[in-house]
Amino acid sequence: MSSITPMWTSRKAVIDFQHKALIINNNKSLNGGSVFMRIGKMVSLTSFLGCFLFTTVCSETDKKTQIENRFLLLDSRVIDQTENVRLQLGEVTKDPNNPLFEEDFWADPPKPWEARFDNMYPNVIYDKEDELFKIWYKSFVRDAASEATPIEKRPFNRYSAAAEGRKRGILYAFSEDGINWTKPELGLVEFQGRRDNNIVMLNFEGGVLKDKQDDDPARRFKMFGRIDTERQMASAFSEDGMEWSEPVPWPDYNAAGDAHNNAIWAPDLNKYVGITRAWENRVRTVLRTKSTNFVNWSEPVEVLRGENPSAQVYSMPVFYYGNVYLGLHSIIHGQSPHDLVDTELAWSPDTKNWQFISPGEALIPRGGNREHYPDSDYDAGCIFASVPIVKEDEMLLYYGGSNYYHVNWRETSLNLARLRLDGFAGYETDNSASGSVQTSLFTVNGGDFKVNADIKDAGSLRVAVLDEFGEEITGYTLEESQAIIRNATDESITWNGNDLSALNGKKVAFRFEIENAKIYSFSGNLEFLDL
Image (cartoon, rainbow, N blue to C red; front, side, top):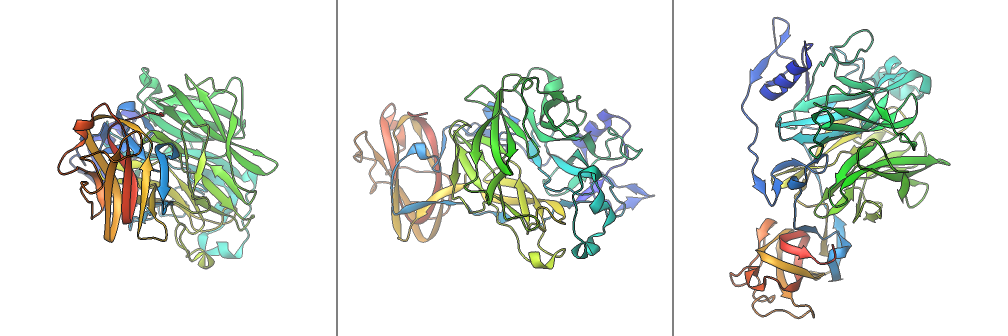
């Protein structure tokens, strides 16, 4: 679902348009022109637990927007012991509007710079200042095989990814509602003798973040990636995310970097962390680098690799959430031309030491009907995700989905999967109707205590507060706990109507007793002693 804007006379015109208007539908026109309609603001932003109800996790770096005092149970540091439970990935729901937008090379009118999105490597943020969703995505603006072969003829011809017939670019689009997307004709980059396109940079592939840490407005947006023509890692900067500086090559080191390069501001490390990849002896691995100024990067060091050569880590967008770092790593399976890509989940306490969560299981399952290509499901072959966006009580996971094998014909589109708040992974009962999860010690600094959990039919969740020796505290026993009997999103728990205020300053642990339920996280005025 995308639309086209007319050629812009200036960068300011693009910004003003983004602030004020939404293109209604490219199919509706007046005297041959697009129809515009002034609309009101999409959503008011209210603060909640130190986080905005509508905020990008990590791609827009602002420490105040991070959810503080929130603890994900996938973080093994906060777990002391468990009984009759297992950690399982959450379940996403794919948006019925998928695909949100597609390659428009063969559209009417065509976009010749969208020959093949390939992996797309989407970088989606919600920009609170502009009240817009924004995406920067990769496209092969030249791909000789795709340009020469209409979609209906592709099943009868073998795909050839000839390097001399390819050229990469970074494209930009925006949306007011996250569903209907506009690909503006920015007038910034010349392509085939014209500038009426949404290209923001050629010969580059990289990740974008909006950085409020930097005092220099010319560096508000940052791009971390690789100059393809030189095979050199580099950084670029922009005031508005559309008009970019020339890439600044890394002065000291380099990496293969032909993947979803991405960087974040790591709030507890007080520096930027970049994630790229190595590719040696036909094995892909994840590399980590760090910087204090986004120009001078440290020597990249391997921090993650797949469990075997048939399950390699292709790329990994990372983000900070709930006092941990999470990675949405792409795992490539099989051999070309029948290779598939899944998006899985990993976590780290420090961006250096990573652990897989439910390895071999996809966080966003691929679609089906691959044997019917090109009429297969839009995401039947490959999935490459962006970092999530928190929206009230859910998380939005945008991803590039392809309908066929990785090194083969495939058409790629932008899609959306929804996940309940904090629902990356949680503990559920294991072959038993009931089980328990006991946490490590925390210091109580206030009264609030909330949980996120899914409760099945006839299920429940109760919480006992334990002292330093593991004994239930009088007034906060399991029997005195409020019982949660329905799905809970940041739902407060009390004990005979009392909150945790009476335990202020004390060291305590929590034991969650669940029956036919799955618990993801808890939050409150708590200080984790091991952080």
